[in-house]
Every structure is written in C-alpha cells, then in structure tokens.
Amino acid sequence: MIHVGLTHFLVVSAILFSLGIYAIVTRKNAIMVLMGVELILNSANINFVAFSKFGNLGLGGQLIALFIIILAAAEAAVALAIVLNIYKTFTNVNIDEIDNLKE
Amino acid sequence: MSLYDIIFYLFAAITILSGFIVVTSKNIVYSAFSLLFTFFGVAGIYVLLGADFIAIVQILVYVGGILILLLFGVMLTNKITNVDIRTGTIHVLPGAVAVGVLMGLLLSAMVWTEWKTQPSETPVTTTVTLGRLLITDYILIFELLGILLLIALIGAASIARREQE
Image 1 (spheres, chains in turn yellow, brown):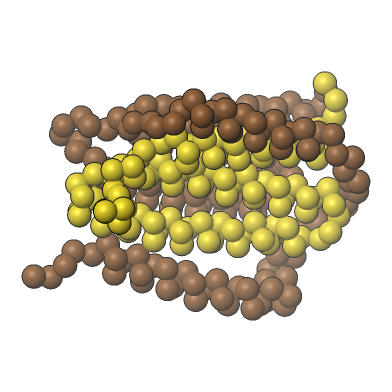
Image 2 (cartoon, rainbow over the protein chains, first blue to last red):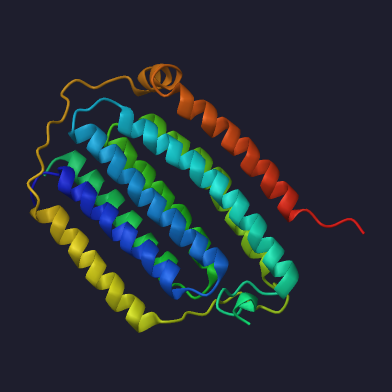
C-alpha cells in the first residue's frame, strides 16, 4: 500500500462519475436519473477540492465546490417540480414512456 | 500505513460501495437511503482533504436538503399502496459496456499522468479564508448565485403548485 496522494482521490472521483453515468443511462425512473446527476456533481466536487489541496493554489477550488453545491440544490428543486408536473400529466415518471413530442 | 490512509480507504469504500448500491438496487427507496451513505462518505473525503467547511455544507445541504427533496419526490410519484415502487432498467448491457470503457479511460488517464503535486504544508483556517474570498474576489459570483437560488426556488414553487380551478 502506497501513501495516499492525489491519484487516490482522483480514482474515487472517476469511479463515482462512472456510476453516475451508468445510473443516467440505464434507469427509467426520472428520480433515479436525478440521483445519477447528484453523484456526478459530487465526483466533480471531489476533483475540485483535491486539486485545491495538492496544487497549493489557495482555496479557490473549495469555493467553486461550494458554488457547485448551491447549484445542485437549485437544480434538484426545479427538476423535482418538473417531475411532479410530469406525474400529474402522465401518472408515471418513466422517461422512456414520455415521448409525446415524437408524434 | 498511517491512520490517514486507513481512514481514507474506509471512506472511499463507503462511498463507492453505497454508490454501487444506488445505481444497481431495484427498489428506489433503497437507492435513496444508500445515497445518504454516499454523501456521508464524500463528506469524509472532504475532511481528509482539509476542507472542513465544505464537508459541513455537504452534510447540511445534500443530506438535509436534496436527499429529503428526492425522498419526497419518490413518495409523491409512486403509488405506495400498489407497491409499485420498483423501477425498471433499459439498455443495461450496452450501458454497462460503455460506462466500463469510459471508466477504464478515466482511470488510466488519472493513474498514468505524472501529477506535479505541491501540497501546502501549513494548514489554513478554511472558514475565515473562504469568507474573505467570498466578499472580495468572488463577490460577483456570490451575488449572482443568491439571485439564481431565489429565482430557482420561486420557479420550482410556481411549477409544482396545483392549478386553481
């Protein structure tokens, strides 16, 4: 076991990113897709904070991570409002069945 | 192997295992609760990176806000009485292959790159420094985000409210 460095944090972040992409690609439920987006935002945040520590560039990276968390909160609120409206209109939230624009 | 390494591997294992359960579990409520452990694991990783303030914000906003919002979404959009809480999957095999290739590329890029690291030796007081940066260098982004959050929340409330007949 080598000493934990920048690469370890980047590897964790890459795995989390891939899991988020997998959730977005394969799940039908719109809320599961939202969970995938949250995983991806978290992995990006790990990258920002890790480079902020190991690059010795001050705390700019941590501040950007803070801004991403705020954006994620706004995004989750709006997306869930849209999902609730979709449920009211179609009585389900499976994103492969909601294709009215295709006709 | 120092204590720092052991704690890192512990938090990394919590994060990745619970993240794996999030994307593979058939029951969406299990996924949501597993996401809780992922967020806690990521908060632990932030602490290990010397970002204590970000870690607390992560727990407050993600666990206290976004996760509760997601659970509300699950409860409001599933017929609980009909026990129709399982969610389907599509394109599992091509999705898994594509994501596997992507993960391999990312991991090889990150492991083989010679990162020039220069960790700062002296620990900084994060909260004071972040607060100073927020009202000096990043003041424009800070104000814009405040306006954006207000607009997003008003918009979400007006989208989600029931129509008056």
